[in-house]
Image (cartoon, rainbow, N blue to C red):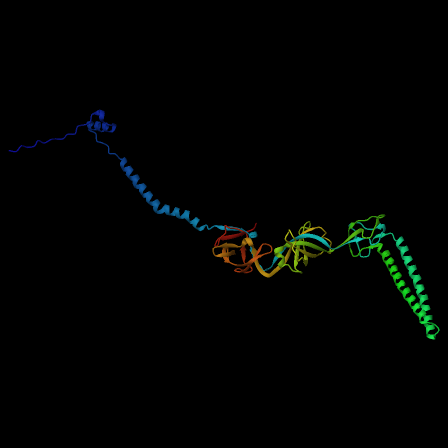
Length: 411
């Protein structure tokens, strides 16, 4: 007979009151009193809230977020930057005459300048001019005393008259001697003597007449006259002063034409020629350019400075230019009419070569160009790549690139 295993009945022992929480104490009290427990509703509220939150999140990520992203990205994609360029930073290409020049510097001097000196000795009676006075050709500038010169002239004339009378008498005697010889009543020796006397008197008269001419010349030279129209630049004598031959009296300059005595770099000498045009700017006369012509070129460079002296003639009919002024000239050695050119800083260079930025339909367009060296005024000649009438950027603006949208604004 097998023995049965005793059945163990498991019973749940209630917690002692001291180990229960407030909620367990409440449940135990309700059990003792036979009251039904209230079902908890808050888990359902939590579940509903979680479902609502999930639905809201799903709606946000499927409807709201894509719309917000699209609305935030669209302006950035559509707002293309537009570069503003001042009109002064642009240039409309047009044909012009380009020049290559050589720079020269020098001083202005009168083309004609004469220092008049005393040609006779004597006391100065008058000096009629002062520096700055304008004179005409033939005007009396100074007068030297002529009393002594007049006496010398009268004496020379008297001596010449005496010799002339003696020659007349000797000529008559020569005729008589010739007649006597013809009649055979005289010897040839008397004729020879008469002929010799006449020859001597003629030579003496010629010398005395030369003395008369010299005395007349000295008398005329005692009056100092202007050799040409001009202006007095210096006066070196005063009335009452005794002067010797060669002493300076006054200086006359002709300012209707002036000469710029300039210097050019010796390396430019091979490019210089007579007749080349020179544009001259003079210190003290701003805003005005004078045109001159290369008149002479020194064949030898000056030692020490290594420069070539160049002489430039300039018309000065209005007398604006004065001697001693300093000028800077540009000698035109080459011209290229009808050429397109831009400032040197407008030319850009990259790996593909030189180019310009043209503005076409509101955008920058890269135009490869071929150049032909530098010309006067900081210009670079453009051989090909652009045409007259096109607008190009001439200011050095490194921020501008090919394809940029641009807007032309007024300064």
